[in-house]
Every structure is written in structure tokens, then in C-alpha cells.
Length: 373
Image (cartoon, rainbow, N blue to C red):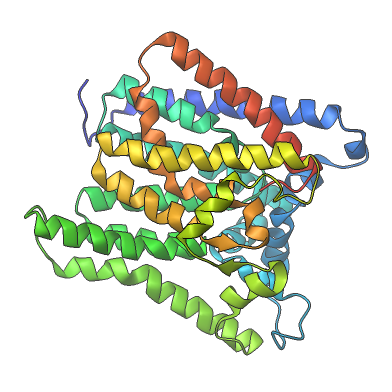
């Protein structure tokens, strides 16, 4: 079966089987990690998956809303760093589940599946069905996506909207691409970069004579408009129109440096939590994977290289506590995973799958026991 924008129903059934296998594997890995850590002996499963690190913020916002009060005096201003789409979804689903932690966990894993489906649709534009489902399986196994598509984080929610937006952009359905990109930017603030990326691709396509300008392209500016609306809302609560940016610097010392920050890639003492060297090496490995992959993916589609490098340049330009989260932020450069569709021989496939499972177990363990991404 050749590359196609049309996906058969049997392909979706096969994807569902892939998702169930991945979900069972992740439950097994998390259970093993929990079993070997005495510190969790008195913790409930929901506390573990929905009340640690960023998960706590999403659940708190869903239950209480964003805090009001003078930005510089309010000790809760860290909550402005978390965009509203995921907490709103948690809040709505909680009318059924009666527990925000359950809702957060369910949504993260539901969107993990939806993201796999969206990714599969994009791969099918470039590859046949068999290679597409295989690439999707390996994408689902990627340690950081497997980990943070399991715990109550917004990464899988953002990735669904970002990938779906690209799918419609590639089909030149700019209105849908813009609306979905706006939802992505209201899920993760870095989604606003989609407007810049689409603009550059339209200019390039126009120059090459491949793109015809239309009024629907104006909708691609939606992420910027949505970010402005959210900023005004935070301003009404905190008195600070730049609360989203200032929260990062006030709470975590995060600033935007420059591309020369790439030199920090080889810095092996950035972590202040043990195991220091192992965490730094993992950061080096993952960022190198995304940077190199962003260049190589041009063999599939040059647009993917521009898309991925834009996000990677933003990620490596950050300074401060954000260095801990850079590998997870790099998931925004998702086109890199289309390279999995180039894996043809069984031996390489097995090696990648086994390596991913081992690294996923490690990633889960670090998430639960130290400050890892």
C-alpha cells in the first residue's frame, strides 16, 4: 500500500492494538519501579501518577482555578506557567470521575492514543501502511513520550494538536490548521511558534511557486491571538501583562538566551539532583538525538527540518532550571520520529524497541525518584 491521505478502518484497529500493548507495557514498567522503591509503600497510585512535579500544578488549577493577587507578592504565581487547556479538560471530565487526579491520568493516556493516531496519519502522507504503523509503534515507545504520556502531564495533549495542525497544513487546509494550532498554544506556550513556522513555510512555498495565497492563511495567526487573550486574563488576575514570561524567571530562573546556548549541550554538571552525571548524560543523549534527527529528516521532507530546528533552537536557547526539562520540551520537534519509518531490517527494529523499553524504565524511575525533566 502506497503513501496516502486516506486511512482504512482496519489500520485504526491495528493502531488500537498497538496502543493497548504500549499501555500494558507502561503499567508493567511503572509497577516494577514502584515495587523496588520503598518510598512509595504508603502512596496511592493516583498520588504517584497525578500529584508529582508538574502534575500537581495541573490538578490544582483544575480544582481551584488560577490564583488572583499581586503578581510579585503572591506566592502562587508559579501556576501561571501552566496553560489552561489541559486543566480545563481535567475540570470538565471531573464532573464524571469526581476526582481530578483520575481525570488528569485518563486524559494524558487518552491523548497519548490520539497522538499516535494523528502521527500515523502524518506518516501515511509519506509512507506505506506497514512502515507507518511500525514508525508509530516506535514513536509510542520513545522513552520521554512513553513516560509523560502516562503520567498526568500535558505533553500528549499538546502533541496531538500540534501534529493534527501540521496534518491539515500539509493538506493546505489552513483554517483547520490555524484553529488547532491555537488550541496547541493554549496547551503549551511554545505552540505560538507554529505561527512563525507556518509563515516561513508559506513564504518559501510561495517563492518556489508551490503555494497559492488565500484568506484562510490569516487563521494561522490564531496562536498569537490566543496567547494574547490568555495574557490579558492573567493580567486581570495578577496585574502583570507578562505573567507567563515573568513566572518562569521568578519561579525557576528561566531566561531566554541565544543559540550559542547549544554549547551547554556538552555540559555534564547541570543537574543538582542525583544521579548528577547520569542525568546530564541522558540530557546530552536526548538533545543530540533531536538535533541530529532534525537535520537528517530533511531526506523525508525539508519542511520537517525547518519545523524541528525552530523548536530545537528555542529549547536550547533557554537558561535556568529549564535545562532539566529540555529533553521533554524537545518532543515538540516530533517530525524527527518520522525517521523511524526508514527502519527496514528486523534486527535494527528489535534493537531500537528493546533499547527504548530499557530507557523508558529508566525515565520512569528518574521521574519518580529525582528531578528529571
